[in-house]
Length: 323
Image (cartoon, rainbow, N blue to C red; front, side):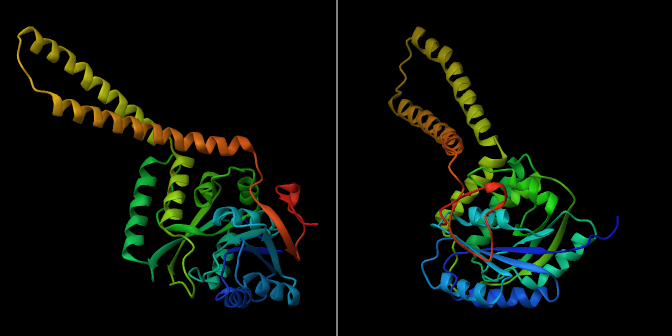
């Protein structure tokens, strides 16, 4: 295969209250790209600190820095999608702005792209600065997702990845509301290459993924790529029904032979057990029904309040509040 020629690479980064890292991040991206033709698309996901002012300052002096400001906080995965919608490059790189993912790795990713890889995803060999709790829960999450997912997903592969234009166009046709982008980029297929790297500790500020958001993110990932939870609920129902069916002749036998069997405690335990299974099953069904409800409402994924150095997204993939 002939080596690909790069006319423009888009670097997409979501930001939420990153006033302590915004300047350093933009500088490091510009230094890392060197002479490569690039655009840096930063999506301000409803920041309430000085992040918007810093981004406006950079956009005013460098037209390669393009800012998409959302009308409120729509979430990390949606903010990435907003940046991808506005990207114009032959290759597009997704990266977080907390500097845990080094921008200096982007030229290496581009070399893999030139050699023919359509998707270059990074795998974290070391995760400095993360708590034992987060590392343990992340390991459990990837283990569970790997067992139940219909799509092979690589452990410790984050959103820091490069997509060729053909892979990106395929990804952008998927407009679901509950998004798990690292799984979606695997689902689209194409030629995929892994790039190991050491993840650094957060440069400054606090993580934007507390436990509540981590749990929601994990549920989105599992619900988006597997029906196994629903199948487990069905199997549990059949098991309980089978045990109840076996208990019928036993109860009849005790009744015929007039055998006294105290059963208050047993009955209470059985009722609580069956009730618990029923509530779990209803909860699982509710998670899927809720996501279906989000889809049928067909609301826009995000609303843009303002733009700098960038036009409206191609094909009007999102509605804009810009005047």
